[in-house]
Image: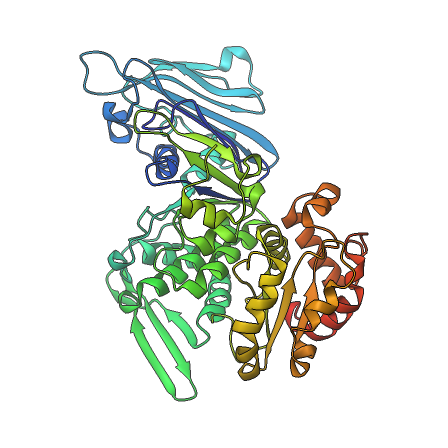
Length: 369
Length: 159
């Protein structure tokens, strides 16, 4: 669970801290351009580092900096298996250079460093080892160290943190691009979930009982669902087919032919099953209400909120009245910017004075910090 | 409606955001789609008017439907009777009037966030206790809660 996310000098996020401690689900609201999606982009940079992208230029560009004369900085503090992990990375933009480089990097567990880095110098401080066994090495300034520092074992703090961060689920689905084809398996879906079928294959291979969770949720939403099949259709490739049945008969529908909203139900089922099978996960879903019928939005949001109460963290953004109403003052954060020349500020709704109905106040543009 | 029309289900019509958040907490503790919180009506009288204009006819044709009208009593002893007068005789078994004796803000000051209170109220319903329903600002609901428990507990809590 994320306790703290701090971002400085990234797009509109200047000295920005997202207060997430103790929240199993959080809603980010705010006008267009207020910085909600930028929070997801910041998390995506950290996720991509853990998934193996280590070239700084592939993660951030000088144009992503609010000011080029100050470092771009990300700090994330998470609680995993009862321990506090803190990862910090800062990039700098030197005058005359087109590419950012690493200024500082650090991973600590319970306040003890796993490794620290300043510019090119990396210092491995293996917890429990004698000082003389600690390691130092140099690394290209344009490479992030986290993906390349050797893990000692699957229970090594470095492994635990990297695996958790790599499995951060950041979703901005584009259903029309999602097909049922897969040629591989993954537990790390991409932002647009175009690899849905690979995620399905990976999850069911990793934890076959996960299919039960998927089926349980989907049958509540689509009572005529019979099953989902994922047959082999060629060398190393599979294709998802969804079967529906009622008293009148059975029909098989290729996954890509489901409606956009139905594909979102499938993604929701995967999130619930993934959190149960290889969580606790953090899921950031940018506008989960997109593509859904009005009468489904509340159930959809509540299903996610309910599931993450028992572990993990669900972070959503929304402009949808029904989605907004399914959160409450203590778990709704307002992001606000006066203009494009000013950075985002964030305030818990519980600290704001909103007169009358929140949705009405948002429609009137009356919700300001 | 996404709540299955053919299954028993509860629609909650809250007076305002505070009551809506209480209901959110309740639904977070209930693992079913057979409960849905509607848009806040904007006042206790508007809840009653909205019920009368939008829901009475629908309830006649949708027999598995139950409704909870969630209003503030504002410390007025006769408010329950006023509310009951809006409920046609043939629907009294399926409509319940609940709410905080004064206003939810006072309950929040005593018991924590609205969602936390809502979850505690659901727990009471599931476990047939009155830890939270017995609070000074809620215990006037006892008779309505008894009626409600008899009818909705089995399908909301899968008992």
